[in-house]
Length: 241
Image 1 (tube, rainbow, N blue to C red):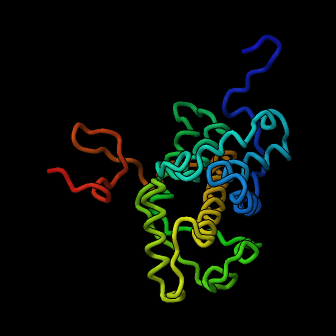
Image 2 (image 1 turned 90 degrees about the vertical axis):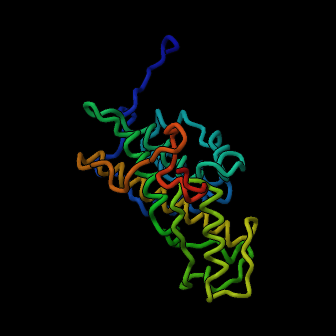
């Protein structure tokens, strides 16, 4: 620590006693996606709110530095930026309770939740879809927004499964949804809102002392050698006998 400065261990940065409003943070993350991309949008939804409500030390974080996490880390399609942003957020805010690293436990839960849930879940209060040129009825307020279960935390897998599901939906057969389309961007913006919402729910439970881990499972191991892996390697690879 630089002399004269104060080091703030995890879990001591401060968090509102009554928690944050997950809907407010989710709406903020949704809108921030269009300027910050997925990872930083989730972080801004939660940490940006804490910067404005609690101030220091959260104000020492420049959330723009996390734009690199967009599209699976600079467009590499690896871990989804919304899951990465959620994991970074819980590990910045939460600490170790006894022998349990609550920040890491929550980030595991968020990865598993992402993989197991039909997404996006969050519906924005004020959608930017039409103002950004979108015309498909399914993506407008009141429409049946397509969702998909990624069964993976990877951006590449998740995005392609969603585009396949969206293009197969009978409510908009005349639209071809590709990665660069406003429909895909609207999906990822809602995904940022979804993950910000769930992140706040877990943090609120942590603050209230009611958080328990493991609700959606955890990672698996891959062959050969039992390497770290998602819990369904065969989703991408031919099973190794």
